[in-house]
Length: 315
Image (cartoon, rainbow, N blue to C red; front, side, top):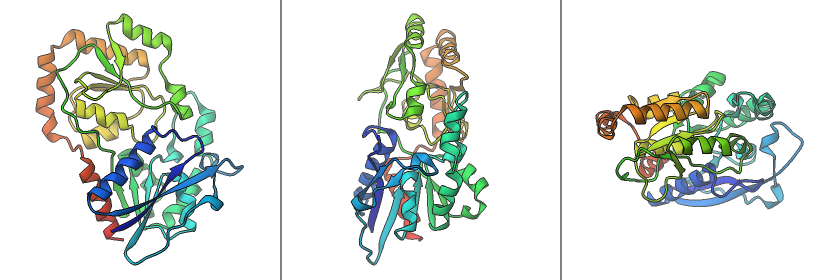
């Protein structure tokens, strides 16, 4: 199959943010399965329009793929969806469903992302036969807002990097993610919060190349999209605390996950970690994970690519 893969470029996007990593790995998975993939970056500039976050596509710098028999076109990321009125699109990949963006205590930011968003998605949804979502929660929300898309949606959670975690650490707290996006910068740990973890005997760090099973903190205060770090924490069998809403993803991907909690604050997450560390042994924790893990549905990148190709074949 020949695929024209349009993806976001420019307008402050960090090459190491979750969306950019997702696109690179998705393209690699499709190619590994034999697809021929043309990467087509979509450059944007700021513009006075709604939704403001979408910007305006730089038409003069856009390369339009030439149509051909059997070719398929994917628009990856909602900031590319204006192209649904320019090219014949077979599939959309929704990274973030902004009509339901939530950031407690930041009403102005919620308004920025929500204003004009429903119409933006509606225009693209109405023109596209297949719609992929990274998040089960957001697929369900979009189907509530647009019942007509039911039967055309597929959820493709971003798989984790393959890992065989080393022996469990009761000191390490995995915190991962870029800070190029404003909601992430507003969510980053403060020096005082980091100091409180240190005082409690914990060490904050990224996963690295050979991660241990440990604790995992999702410090994002906002809820939108899929938390890529969550899948890596599940693969590592981390004890997870999240300030963002991950309940739907946990229920669908890792039912019966033995140790996770929705935390109202970073301090509450710290108390949860401290309680587990002080109350349970490593052996008890690992035994609970061994019992629950067979029920999980954690995809590989091969599974991910096959799901996309299967849906495209039906369009």
